[in-house]
Each structure stands twice: as C-alpha cells, then as structure tokens.
Length: 270
Ligand SMILES: NC(=O)c1ccc[n+]([C@@H]2O[C@H](COP(=O)([O-])OP(=O)(O)OC[C@H]3O[C@@H](n4cnc5c(N)ncnc54)[C@H](O)[C@@H]3O)[C@@H](O)[C@H]2O)c1
Image (cartoon, rainbow, N blue to C red; front, side, top):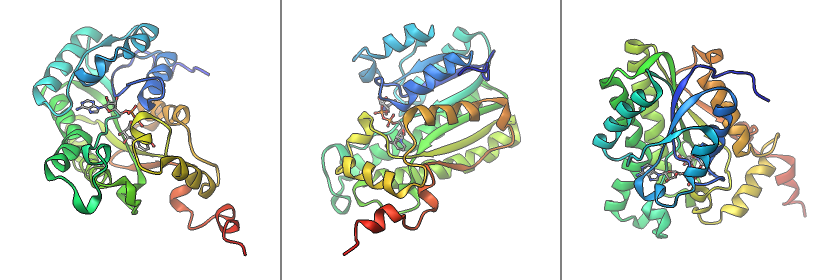
C-alpha cells in the first residue's frame, strides 16, 4: 500500500543488519513511498554483506559509519548530501548494542567499560548524529529524526540490563536536542517505543521468547511487528506529523497502558 508519502524526500537509515531488522523494513517501506536514501551501518556489520541486497532493491548507496565516531558521522552526512543531491528530510536511528547483555553480565555486576560502550553506541550516538546534522546544516526545515526505543526506559524489565539505562538516556537526548532542533531548524525529533520484536538485537536479551509471548498477552492489540513499526516510522517522516516533536511515542498494541490483561490473569486462575 504505497501513497507517495515520502515522494521527493531524502533520508539516512541506520541499522539494517538483515531482513529481520526493523530498519530493513523501514527502508523497504520508505522506498515504496518514493523516498531516496542512504543506508548506513557499522563497518563490521557491512562486512556481513546482507545490506547490499537491500541497497540494490531500494537503489540506495551504502555508506559505513561507526555511530560512536563523530568523524565517521560527519563524513556520512556530507557524503549523503552529495549522493542524494540536497539536504536530508528524515533520519532513522535504529542502533543498539550492549556488550554486557551480549556477554551475559548481570546488571548488578556490569563491566563499566562495557557500560560506557552501551551508552555510547545505543544513546550518545543519537546526540553525535544530530550534532553532525546541525553543524553541517544538513536537515531540511520540517525534517524528522526518529530513534527506536523500548519501555524498559520507564519500567523495570530485569534482563534488559544496562540497555534500560541507555534507552532512558536516548529518550532524554530526544527531548533536549529536539528542543534545540525545533527552535533553530524547525526539525522534529522523536522516539518510537516498539513492542518486543524478533530481531538480532532483540533475541540477544535473556528469556526473550517468553517475554515476547508475555507482552503479546498483555497488549489488547497484541505485539506490533517490525513492518507495523516501519509504517509508523513512515508516518513520522511524512508531512502529516509536522508538529509532533520531543515525544516518546508508544507503538506497542496498548501494552504501556495496561495494568493487567484477562489473558494474563487467566494464567493464575486456581
Ligand atoms: N527488537 C526489539 O525487541 C526492539 C524493541 C524496541 C526497540 N528496539 C530497538 O530497535 C533498534 C533496532 O534494533 P533491531 O531490533 O532492529 O535489531 P538489529 O540487531 O537488527 O539492529 C541493531 C543495529 O545496530 C547496529 N549497530 C550496533 N553497533 C553499531 C555501531 N557502533 N555503529 C552503527 N551501528 C551499530 C547493528 O549493526 C544493527 O544493524 C535498536 O535501537 C533496538 O534497541 C528493538
């Protein structure tokens, strides 16, 4: 279902690792809606090569950037404007990684070097990206920047570990930088807080399968999948949402406002 919602728009999409990635679906949908964009990921992810399949399908250039390197991000922003022939209308930040989660370190016993890495990759990278865009005056007026987050920023999900702290920081950067980008550039910045979704990053969290089933049973509409998340991102990049900024937008089938559901209560029936 394409409606030319992004016709004539130029974007940068971070984080398409494989066809399960939320960013992959966003790229496919953005292409269907008429956008032109650059795909970016960490050099180590590009070496896996899967992104080239997506790039070919979408007619997109792939430009590597480690999101913890301001140098890489500055170069990415410049190259993207050259490649796309003008300023950027939308950016998707779909980047997350915690060495503590990956290596099974408990939250109460985190390795602090890794904790710094979690913050740098999963949250401060948004600050670095927006700063690069601001310093290069790379965003069009009424442009839109979206980052993906998770409700562990507000409520405790014990196995989400230090990613919960990273998501809190990510959402705070969204508000703080969103203010300045709105005032100076008329650009909006938001996070979308997505249901648990089966992807490489998602399935790294301990007990993820059970957790997906729990969230599904707790959500009146059920879990939102990656494609539905992509649809929401497209609406946030479109001109239909021009006055939405500095928000954390739940895209979770109603999970965030449900205290308990009958499906979950029934599991405790004696
Ligand atoms: N899957 C879920 O359940 C879920 C739920 C809510 C939010 N999210 C968020 O959605 C976003 C995308 O995750 P996903 O689930 O599609 O998984 P994914 O593993 O497909 O995507 C994560 C991406 O981050 C990239 N990345 C890691 N380190 C990087 C670096 N240094 N520089 C640049 N890129 C780097 C990876 O290469 C990968 O492409 C993440 O922010 C994640 O936290 C996921």
